[in-house]
Length: 349
Image (cartoon, rainbow, N blue to C red; front, side, top):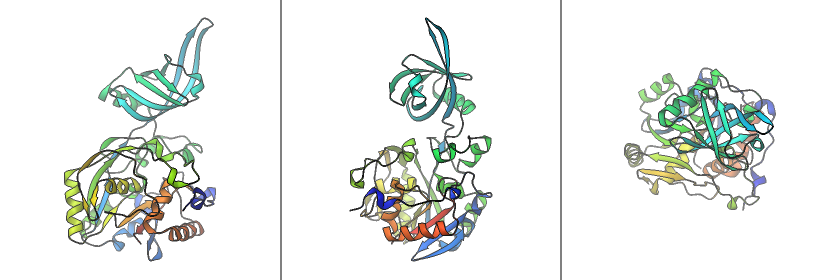
């Protein structure tokens, strides 16, 4: 029985990446397939073979961090407060659930103005605030894009503000389906040149969609990890993606999801060992040691936060002791950690 402390480790702060490597495929890549090999993402074709299938998450991150002013009229005159908002879940065409800071300055009925966009507070529960905007549908999407900043993870946002460079850096080259409020960061290492080299050598790829939510950064608060309840995220495995995955499995190729989001989704859509079906809905699958994988043969992923469910997922795939070994190796060898950090290619034990 594992406890939360089993997934803790000490990380030197200077190994937390605040910017990605350029070009994208220049990041270091630790390969674990029995032993440990130090490589770079540009070397990825050396560790794959014709007939393998990479599964990418094609979700598109919205610039969900909004900075605005709350205006309120009272008997004592008008008051203005600066409010930071992170959109976390769309409720309807004009309404979003959000996290507001400082939420204590907001009450139901208040209006927050973000340049040309305005939103009314229609519900409040602690730091969670439901906002109804004065635009709807695609017009609201355009408004958010115009005024928003990329929702960088807290461990980056606390060190520097998001800027124009993040609009490119924090988005994958194949992002299509708008709806994520955090990036599927393992895919940030890919560019057109690397994708072309992989295709030329016979490594295939397919795309699924999982809209990464803000819950990906929420800490685990229970000591016994079996008691943890995962946040849910919306995803879809299309008929075409399911066909490609099943065809690869039948032909003996390996299924390598790029990122924990893609892995969680294809395991959610699994019918049985070696078979997947089209799927759409909300998934809260929690993959931890003891889980029996049905589809994935490996995983390409970044290095994760201590005590996170992602550490638990990786431990389920390659073994707890192996994870301890590769994380110690990564720290000793100066690998860069977290969303903008280096990569690893891990094959199932």
